[in-house]
Image 1 (cartoon, rainbow, N blue to C red):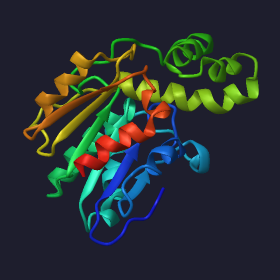
Image 2 (cartoon, rainbow, N blue to C red):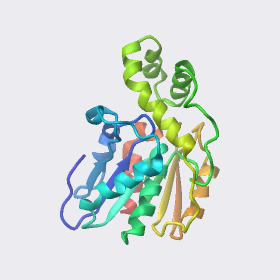
Image 3 (cartoon, rainbow, N blue to C red):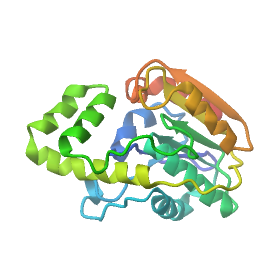
Length: 236
């Protein structure tokens, strides 16, 4: 997203289910100058469309921790939204196992990793899957078009279904909490996770925990990137 200056930390962003790296472009524009901003591009979408999808969050974390090695010359912070929050957490575990504790882990719009997924949507029909994505979207009309545009649906839905499968098959492996500070963020009207549920992330760190609640629904951060960036900037 944006290269950083020597001696400044780097922020790595993890997209939500069905999302892509470009979704963090607006947020990157509000991060403190000099901080490097990177976003993960999961296989099977956008410029990686020809690569096989990976329906396993821990396997993705393995790959991302290895791919982050060139960034480990300085301090590293991780930000994940929804599915991305769980992958960021698992990546933090792997980095800490290698002796590189992130300076901060931001978890947004996602229940704690020890809580299993509530619904099974990966195996439902396209109409049900579209309805769920529409329910979470800030602009439902942008999702409703998938019902009438079969070419667009064929391009978008495989990644969405893959990511729901990855979320639903994820099993938290008990272990030591991460050592890095964890900062939770959520929308006040998020239908997926309440502030009380997000607060349960505090049991997954031996460091500090803070919780920030913003106006909005599941994708609150798309509407107020500057406010989210303010929290990030104050923590790194």
